[in-house]
Image (tube, rainbow, N blue to C red; front, top):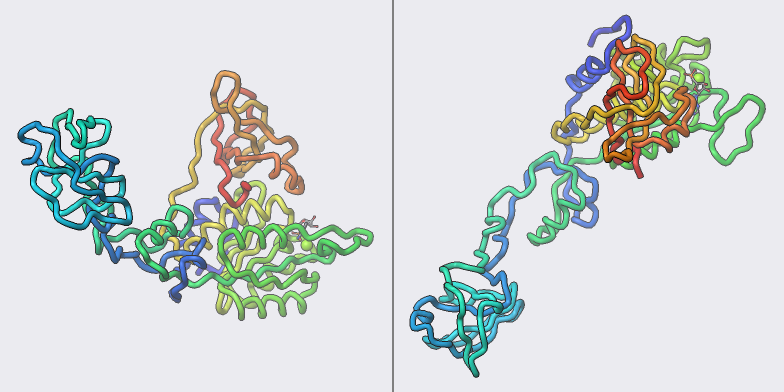
Length: 411
Ligand code: AMP
Ligand code: MG
């Protein structure tokens, strides 16, 4: 890795630098389905069975053999087949079997005629419509054949996937081990929530935010608390974090103030990949390598910390955790209902509210002041307004690009 990258680097270059260097965790474990929510498949899951497991009826109606229908005469009912209770017994020539949805189709049946296409004729059943071979019969393995791959490796298991595995009778699934991520905040001014504030102190927002996002991403969090702005304390935190985690995330101390030691510590104990991005907010973001782990130094301002986590750390963790390359986050062009302040030079992620106007068109409005300390802008927003690096002020009515928040910021 280059020891140092001077100047501001673009978000895309930063991302590709990070993603090109890291490889997914190799270790896997097998967990029961009930404990697999949010975990990532370590291998493709192969179906051990046919789905459906046997040919069954798609309708309530009558199972028939086509030859028995040739005369056009009504057929007597020789028995019944229910879901869970198949028809067993002799099926005399010239008769039909009453059958319910999901019931196994009796041996020899060539079609199921839906009830609505029949008529009672005394004890017998009259068939009113043309009957085609195979109609209303769901064949064994039609949905999923035994041996077919139902999920590929590198997928996050959730509501769409786990019930599918349950339907196949798969009780356990091989997943990647969870990522271990250490987090600490730096700053003499920080107090944990719940403690009283002395003069000049503020609450530690970033560790709280980062923990929440890590938990949502299914990581194992190692919380090292608040580290004061002195080199010895910071060195000890770096060393402990590196010995326990795959990824170390700090916040604060990455700018050029007199108490900003994070970058120096990364240089002392590891290697810097880059540390200044051409984005706003979030310019002072550091990425590098420690002995055992990857290091991400988030900016101190809470909006910048969350934004850089979202835009940079989230994809990094996705790759490390074994997720197969995710599609780029969807962006779309909409009209801005607000005028927006913008200085050319950095890619800007303003917080916006995407909604439908009276004409039914999507439009975005600003959440108001965009300072990197205005954390409330996130709670009012549902998207980023992504303004190109070289763009200046935006007038109301101009087209802008928006990126709707994913579940890390929504809900
Ligand atoms: P720094 O990069 O350490 O100079 O911090 C930049 C700004 O962010 C300062 O105003 C800090 O007080 C503030 N800040 C740093 N860390 C946190 C944190 N964990 N929670 C809230 N604000 C913070
Ligand atoms: Mg600080």
